[in-house]
Length: 213
Image 1 (tube, rainbow, N blue to C red):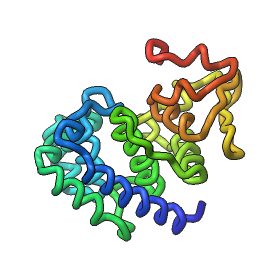
Image 2 (cartoon, one colour):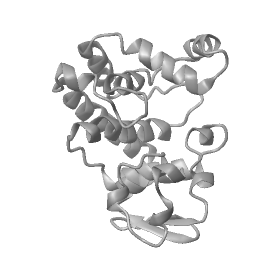
Image 3 (cartoon, one colour):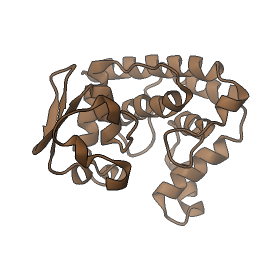
Image 4 (cartoon, rainbow, N blue to C red):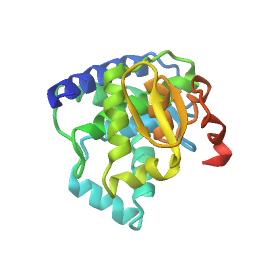
């Protein structure tokens, strides 16, 4: 996909996610997400921080004592103390902007909005289909991420010895025992989510389990 096409998808996904968030009940807003230890509101708040500048990142790193993962989690939880309306409005207001957080390409916002959209929708039983071509673009980015971005998912190391093959688009990576299924389920797998496991098949599926990660 071209950069313009990617941004168009990001815009659409942010707007549709804002629609979904506006529709959530108070109970759904604090429901556990697919991210361990994160509520739906925490994930939404993380997405609302996609335009965080370098100064704020530096401050967050100091507060988290240099631990990047802790900084991400802490800043999201702090921002989630804002209202559901505030967080949703911030996500909606990003549509049309090409701004991105320090140190990332235009592909990271695509990965974030696609995957975190599922982190929110799946545990709530809300349907949120992924656009297939965009999901394949995001999956390729996760597989080929350079260091230090690759440390977020460690996809190549975690899925070593497996060949991942999409059944709904011409896309594959890796070598070894085959794991095949919709690109949406493969993207979740690449980013450490097991929610799409039931949609996958092949000789390598037996190696995929929460205990085996």
